[in-house]
Image (cartoon, rainbow, N blue to C red):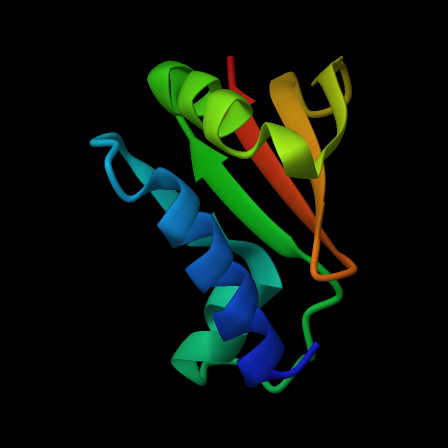
Length: 94
């Protein structure tokens, strides 16, 4: 996934949540890639949020949600989304 595709996905997310006020952050390889820390091309976007945030993402991005589940391995409430044909994973670690 190139920087332009990452930017388009983030714009779609930000547009959907622009009226909300909560904490979240881009994690993983996409974060490092955008900062220029790593040359590794991200295969997906990883977002971390907290309890309030997972509820906001669930409500505001419902049209993109492919899976909504508790991930035992990560001990996190997880949303898997498909935005512009790319995987976005949002996690609230419990």
